[in-house]
Image (cartoon, rainbow, N blue to C red; front, side, top):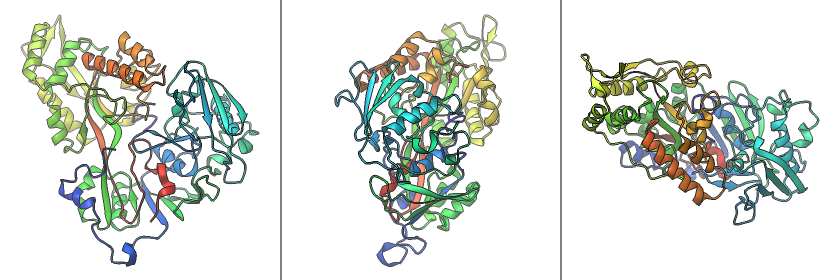
Length: 548
């Protein structure tokens, strides 16, 4: 489940940089608050206030396109599996994660048996059974429903329900990503929806449920005050029992300055992502714990392998070796992120062993000379009448342009001319924009990963636009075959070996240069207990354990 970060979907250990002064201050209690029991005067016992710049566009995940929906749905809905802090499945409605070893996945990878907990109930008291899962599959594929994505669901041939607590999923072909559609959050993952409420509707597009759902998760949505907040109260019928908190307020504060100010004045208890411009002020906020957590967002330079000049792998490798990426990460991005050498997170079970590109402009110049790219009178290299003049594009943000200027200067030194042409995100990432139509040379932005390492949508020749998101327009049969083979088995040992082969090949062909894995600062009231920020999708994965 990978996708373009800026279009459809939008850790290391806590306190990883504790050696820095403000992190050290943030990772311990700064001010005890002075009230009995260690409670700060601003803490509302039993009630948690979370700040967010965004509001859900829909509560029903089948129709929602915003990160805010993933966040609040984690309170309301229980999927079969949740994702833990590092992307591993945590059984929720299911009793176990199916594997070959426990018999949950057949040896031919065509059948998955899902065991649900006995006695599950919706918040209105109706039984929650395997029939609700089967109904959700039907609803996702129903042409009358404007489902945002059916990826994975359309690989299911049938779901048999021999009893309330068992679903037998038959696949059209093996696809390891199918387990992800039963997971918690993300672009195409949907929790079971209530058949008893929704099955008789002609479609779900305008169902009242989409804004006022019943619950299968730890909390109920009590009120949605549009533009202001969403209010949650405990679900007494949650299978684990009622959560520890008496209530949660999801406060919608679009202005980032106001949002940070509410952290400093303790009008909110949790700020899930602190902007770079505010980090230096965190040490002065009493009673706030700050942790740094890895996220599955990676910044990279994408190279359009179908463009003149860039079709030559020698040119692409020279670009990779002529830029001091370590200096860029340390200066433009303040060293706050983890250097990346692939698009699979360093703590993933599938993480490959791939070297960084060396910074060696002299060697890059030599390889260009040897490949027939000779400097012209203006210093720009030319071969067979074709000049190494490229345009680099990003979104209109100051940090992007600063990085682009560094690339421009360092590439000029080896005879590659770079022109900067940036766009609003709505244009750059549009389906008819520069990336997806191939009308670009180099592109600088952030991509994001789902918990499963499947990345064929980014690199396979089968997913070149308009059929997918391979906007490097790389058509390599080895990568195409290997990335497909990696999702045709559920065996992690086999998959890891295949991803190692694929990532090695990507490194050789240089359709991309990876810069960093984004690391996020999370700030929260240190009276809050049980809060564990996560690498993927949502920090709200274990909200039933929180207390304040």
